[in-house]
Image 1 (cartoon, rainbow, N blue to C red):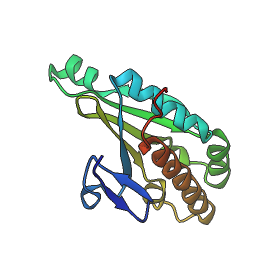
Image 2: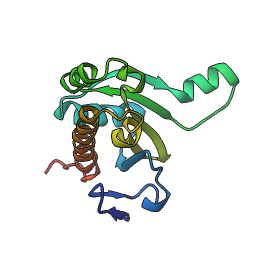
Image 3: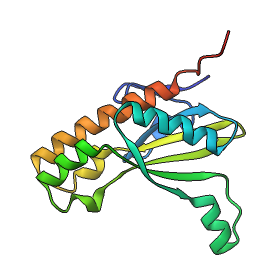
Length: 158
């Protein structure tokens, strides 16, 4: 699998050249047969770092239902680590306006899925609260570990 290594996130991003990634996110590519399999892999990886998925928005279905527009599979997962969210709410009561952490799971090509994480440091810069800044760094590190694990080829049964 070809890709470009991003030293800041320590992840290879084979979906989009690292220079083209948005300043507010980072990601990786995974292989999966369909959206359900891709979301299941991402959800399991999130759970390993203490995150749950609070919401799942099916953008493809919404665009089809509301506008009659056909679109590749595109899902937005609202991921939350309850312990970290609680700390953020204690530090900044209205921080919920910037939560949860969005994770996009979208079809890049048949059998290939882009997984793009919102960069909490970029988003939470909207507040100047030092504790929120420290939490944002911690959340970013966890999301980067998730992405790095997802980017590793899946083990094949022998």
